[in-house]
Image 1 (tube, helix red, strand yellow):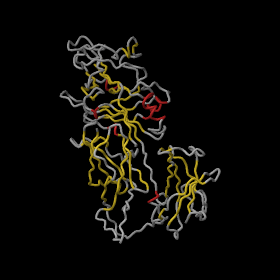
Image 2 (tube, rainbow, N blue to C red):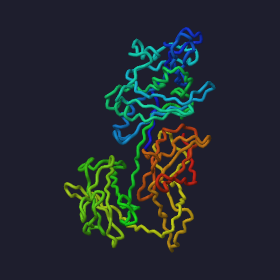
Image 3 (spheres, rainbow, N blue to C red):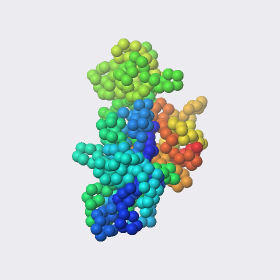
Image 4 (spheres, helix red, strand yellow):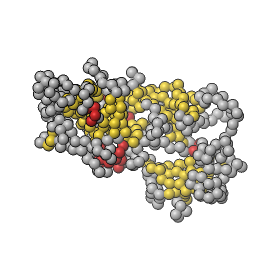
Amino acid sequence: MAIKRFSASKTNTITNAFQANLTTRGTGSNMGDADVMEVFSIYGQASTASSELSRVLVDFPVLTTISSSRDTGAIPASGSVKFYLKLTDAPHVETTPRQFTLTVAPISRSWTQGTGLDTINYTDLGVSNWISASQGVAWTEAGGDFLTGSGEPATSQYFVEGTENLEVDVTDAIEQQLDETIGAYGFGVFLTASLESATTSYYTKKFFAKESEFFFYRPVLEARWNSSLGDDNNNFFLSSSLADSQDNINTLYFYNVVNGQLKNIPSIGAGQIGLSLHTTSGAPSIALPVGGGVVSNGDTNVTGGWVSTGIYSASMAFTSSTVTTVYPVWFNLSTEEQLLTGSAITVRSRSNNNNYQIPDYYCNVTNLKSSYSNEEDALFRIYTRPRNWQPNIYVVANSEPETTIIEKLYYKIFRVVDNYEVIPYGTGSSQHTLMSYDRSGNYFNLDMSMFESGYMYAMKFSFELNNGVYKEIPQVFKFRVE
């Protein structure tokens, strides 16, 4: 699982705009229970008035739910995960501005959502509002207290058409909130200072709020990271001059499962682990070249390390061309205590027939269920083989046909009824929908709490051809969330 979404705990719109009489400003108005939020600047509506402004406030349970998720390992440590604030555009019949920039800045004071609903006449009074952050506590500066100074974790997004969704990287702000170097009170979203003071109106940009009836349109904070594990137990290659040094590296994994749960090895914890390769059980260790966890040519031990709770890995190149099968032996580097002798690994050789063809694959989700609970963390296992594959005919058929490993295989999920993309392909820098693979093929985990229950969803897969060029596999796999 490399995506986790956190729903907003509070949303509100605060404004100093005039009511319909163009005399009284709605500075005491509250719109905390409204299903939309609004950002605008109106210039010159009242002849003696300065600009009328509206700003959005949105908060998330950073020091409770998000912090707990990190403590339990549901999201990675700082530096291994990105956080994105996502607000969905709310279509409306009023004018939508174009070519403007919205600032997204941490809120530096605690605030109360309130229960106001009136986003038209601003007649619902309460807190928070333009003047007050909460009952009896005023903002230091009318319109909200935000961290927008030099060196502070504010960011922005430029809107060309004005109807785009907002999606900004707020990792720095969230990490600073988690370690409590700044206040953990959410984000303000508003036009830049130059646009708010401009002699031009920017009316009006709307987003769906947490009270929206539309499940997927509510504000979320999305954590993304690359959780893929590339276990080469069934993808182990002899080094070749046809491949570069990185492609000649093989990585093997050790999963320490105790009573059905992944647990750290007590004598190693989160430390280093050793690995050696042997032609048969009990045979001498095979000499290895420099690369991965091998420091010197001819070393027989590979230094590996802790990946996550109960998972360890080690990487090496392999140049023994006369060896076709190896057995991995994992051991404690300090005590040389043997921990595990793994199953036999076939050493493959790279071939080049000088006849390049664009790969094409057939896929199947071997453990797909018709429905899942929205409280489930589901594991999907993928069987893959080349399309139009012609197997050799044996006297006795294999009970489990060999799967083809695709090292760069991604997934996306969409709602069937309207093709709404719940999780688009994550092929960017975070690689958050890149699948893992092991001896049995490709696989990935999916947090079903991200899906609205009562709907049918479908998944599709895409693989990287070369240098950022991707090809989608035509099969579609459907499931329902209840």
